[in-house]
Image (tube, rainbow, N blue to C red):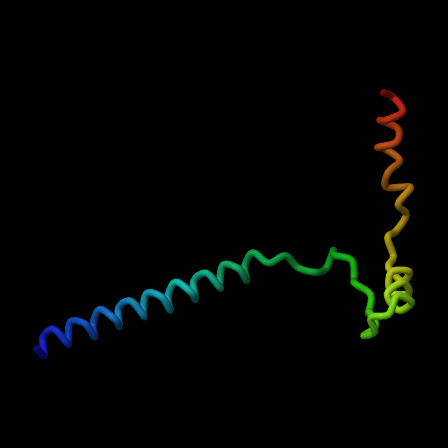
Amino acid sequence: MSKILLIIIVIIAAIAGFWLWSSNKSDEGLLESTPSAEGLPQLPEVSEGDTTSQIQEDLDNIDLGDIDKQFENIDADLNNL
């Protein structure tokens, strides 16, 4: 009876050890492949309110850059069709 209990404990410990090892390995891979935020645009601060006027103000504060300039090439290609 004690041999069976010992075998069960060893199997459970092996499964737990493998699970911990595999979860740590997958976390390390995520950290290595995470892109840096240097080239990404910064998000503006948003208000805590949920009224329409506060949401509209938050949307107005978003800087989209020069959208027309970004679509000049696309517009030129469309005009050539």
